[in-house]
Image (cartoon, rainbow, N blue to C red; front, top):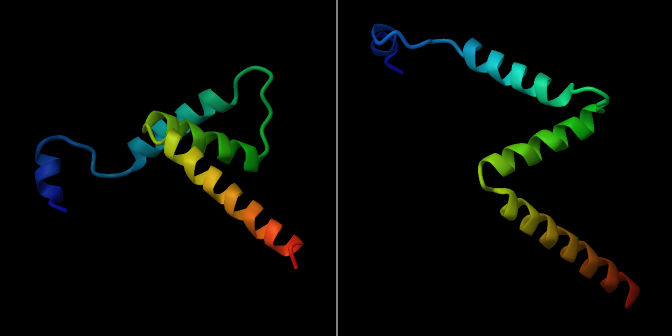
Length: 81
């Protein structure tokens, strides 16, 4: 990266600003009144939220649907033996 150019433009060079913003956003979102999350469920919720914000949610559901269909086919094949 051309750090000298970014520095000359007054842009932040470290990732601390971004990491802090993400942390504050996540904490504000996940620690609302009455909410209690396990790490696993919080991770899943944040992945879904990210998919929604990036317009990828339909693709996420399509992939999950395909995985479920494949598992169902594999299971039905074991029953036919």
